[in-house]
Image 1 (cartoon, one colour):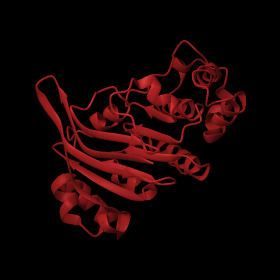
Image 2 (tube, helix red, strand yellow):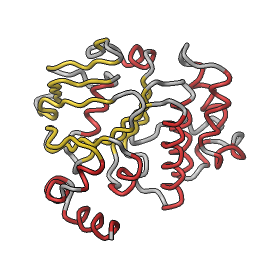
Image 3 (cartoon, one colour):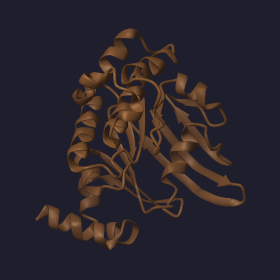
Length: 243
């Protein structure tokens, strides 16, 4: 479905991605993990056309998309939820959903109605202004809004960062429900427990380079990778969780 081969990216003279390669197959939840500053968000931005790759290629459904404008990439069936959510605070929950659905030919009124169903907590708040929602509710709205565009692939950047445990649980349920409804997912996530509870395949990024690729079980069986590239604290937390 999605493929990156030898992708390099720069911010000015700063070389951020150094030949990144990864794949997302249809029906998979793929997790991209690594320390802060490893290049995870830049990878998503490169896929979405926000940061044009300086080298390498990106394909979606067998078609090259690197170098295309973001709105054209979105029209092919990719949806991106950035780390800062970017909901329209002056619009209601329902209006946020409708705006997203109307922005693409892929969607319909039915998609807009169904989008809220991924997060039942939003349903009674359909008429509430987005700026009056909690951080967790805004994150749910950002994801629901992306799903309203009827994407083939949903990309999430740190969807649970800073959220209370009950909100993290709701986001997890929404991610799994999205996959059940046929949406493939690429997620950047610092919460390793959450990532391991939803992910099928993992790519560990370090200093702009993929240093590990494998299944959930393979990553859990490589504590040295977790310690070196995700942090000793993550490795200890994972060990305690598994016990």
